[in-house]
Length: 91
Image (cartoon, rainbow, N blue to C red; front, side, top):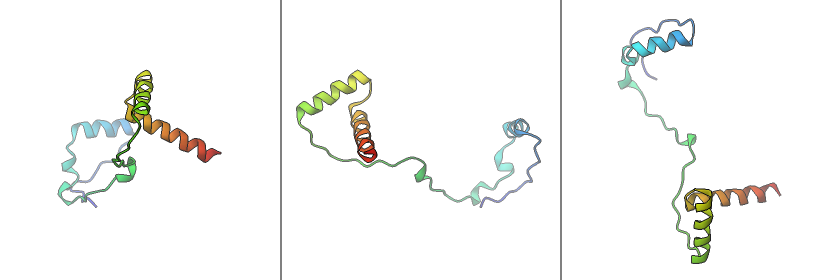
């Protein structure tokens, strides 16, 4: 836990607090050196790189479809896979 070095005032509302922090340095209130490193990996799904071999004609079709949708073809592949998995799990 980060130690407080100066007591925080009581704020009447968010506007008052916002104004206070706009003019105040947080280091006046918190000893940042005593803070702990936090892990927020669950906030955004992590990705893993894979190698996928596709027939050339299939890859070309995906690239054309991606171009029509104005998305990168690898993003389109992820979208199509997600849609298929969602469809299959709903069935």
